[in-house]
Image 1: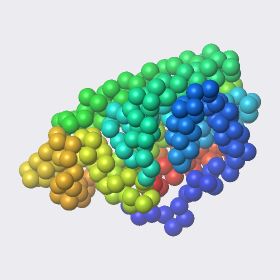
Image 2 (image 1 turned 135 degrees about the vertical axis):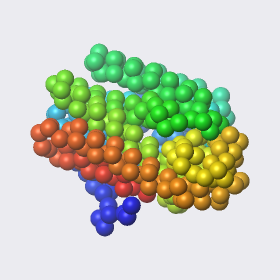
Image 3 (image 1 turned 90 degrees about the horizontal axis):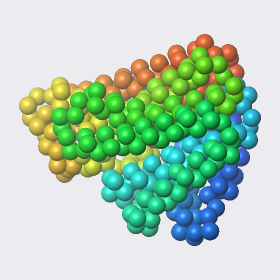
Length: 329
């Protein structure tokens, strides 16, 4: 699929909530403070690593559409970022990763034990902050989400090195591990703004489908992206033995030789035969297939909020769904 002539830019979407995002950064810095120096070092390192802040953006856009109290929306936006950051710290330890977004991972710099424990600190700090906001419905959504994300991480671990992982198993991991936190972000924003149950469901559906689209494109970029833009080397997921959609599709649709080379690469967590794996992915049309799946998810996300009243925040959410599938990083 060709890139659009005027691609959606994340900075343009953020302008709708620019003051809120600045305030969220202040909340993050304030709430990270600890008497334990190592916690400050690791937390600040990972939070300052140049992420897109998509999940806080979703809280603020959903909350802003329903005129949520800014101080509550900003606090919960920081909560979501802390929980996401904790999952990154734990993921990098589990995956034995040494690079993320082109920088050394926290576990590579500070060690596995420190990274896991600081991840735990961020989880617990997030729940302290939710108690301060005092919304039981928000607490319920976030408690469920963190539990399902943890289940997703375990499910992914079970799939590692398994070339028989099918599309259904793969999508279950995506919806649990990635999309659930997107869903929680839009849902709690709606709750904070006093949305109706129908409106809350619409925002939750939007978040789930957006998160799925986002992860599908991440998996596409692992085999077609520019390392200077993505901060990842081609085949990083393959090196960890992760059977993502392009690989699953290539196994399902390739000839005997193509299937075997991809199966062996997954089973061994090996990208030494990367050229042959990429050739199999291209020959079977796996990249186009995965991109098309991502576009369907993004279209469903946009349709989920179609009945909401117009607002700059709704427009930004619609554009964010386009950004999720058009992006190159």
